[in-house]
Image (cartoon, rainbow, N blue to C red; front, top):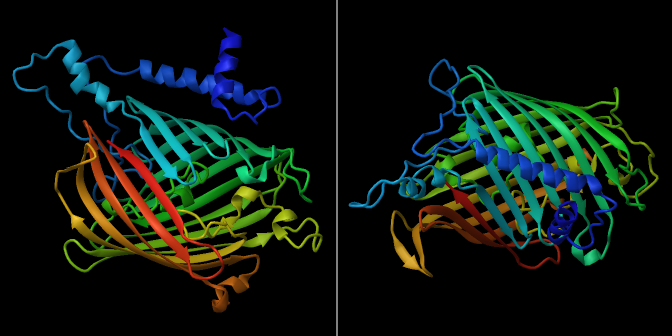
Length: 449
């Protein structure tokens, strides 16, 4: 039995991942599988509806927690004339509720799969993030409790990241950790957050002057958010950054006419106890929707981040500050990517970063049922995109306007239905107007219950 499990795991993990060298990953995968099977076993009996989480007490109206599971559509009924048996109830009832959350991104080759189950007031979730190109894999297990005035979450995770595939390298970075995440919904628009996390970092890279190998990142984070809830980009600033969902465009369905949201967080990494890093990180972001008509609108987003305090272990020992600052590599800001400047292929990491993006949505068709490629297309928005930003290792990045990188693109966002399930499909062709990079094409597919 053990030999068969190891063989099955080896067929899933990329060939260059030496299971003998990273045996804890095998234990993690087996533990995650058993946990998900346990969650599935707690499903209610046929015809029994799972309880919904209690709404937190609020001065004005209930607060939908930012990280709670999305509202599910009502269960479908069996076709007229068909008897309601245990089999038909399974097809049209609770079985549909067990559809996992799935996000797929191209050309990065990222897959994000989440399976969850709500039992009384407790929410259990397992998450796997996998990159088919580089072989990166991250697994999470979460326990979340919904109280009357506070949401408490405990999570453990294990993450392994490799170099880009074109480097033909076997080097890897590994992070194992645990966290406690607290949320206080004060009203529908006002929320407070606190997070404590400890990460154990290891790596086999030999080319770094300051190597993360055998070091521990212990930090706390305090944050606040005011405005419309449910924006995954803003939620990642105050919550689990490593588990963030990177949407291609701002989720327009989460932003009603005139809605806005402002998020800010301060993180302190300290050299107390097992901690080896020493830094203070500040990050803030604001988003606002501007409506020109009932169907045409624009969403603007401004993000600013920096490290007002950081420790240089070996000053001037390398032209690349990222190699000798006592900051974990995952904490640096990145200017390129799906959620930042979409036309940049390179990340352009730094300790100081600013970028501004605008997305103009105008419809092709809405509330329709158009059949194409054996799919039912319900809504289609064209999206005109523009952005500008800069990043670096000094505060001059904010004022050096000639170093800012402009970015433009054209894309779409649509909703479609396959059988009884709905998906959101988005794509964009973007181009950076500075530098030699060509067109960057990005596509995302998201399931929605």
